[in-house]
Image (cartoon, rainbow, N blue to C red; front, side, top):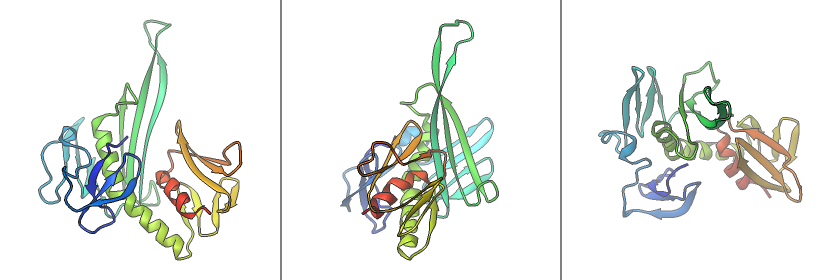
Length: 238
């Protein structure tokens, strides 16, 4: 969903790190050949002068939408990326039959993005919805917000969760409770020995154990911060 390229290193140091389209790599470049912007100007207008990088600013249905490397504002709610405690985004396809031709069926995709603070629905947060006809070409505004999350929010949250686990704490990520000894989700409780990892398919994250024919747990993509689970599991599995 995100274009591969050089982006501002979320781990610090002032350089740029290569995003391969799915994850951050070990490749760091202090002077990249191209600008380290997540989405390019087709997503928005101009540059954000005080923060740098691309900026999205427009009105949708009379409501202001502003997003840059510092914050996202929607419907008079502003969330700073450096402080947000969760993010979530989904693309859910639905098949609909045309009203005029009984035999015609077309696919629509509902796009959802959210960011904010815990507890959800009580602390400040915002949610953004769009609908598109093709899942392989998401709406540009939704994609812009997802790219901001992957560049500026998710790497920080991942570091914070891993640091807390290393310090002996139990954290909850995507409604899965995790510590150094193992994880608990739904009716599944496992140690890290024998865990293969996590895959994603058709709106679900699947936890796999080595040697098992079927996943031992599936987690819906709607859960906040669930996209961090594959990297967390890869770090902790033995």
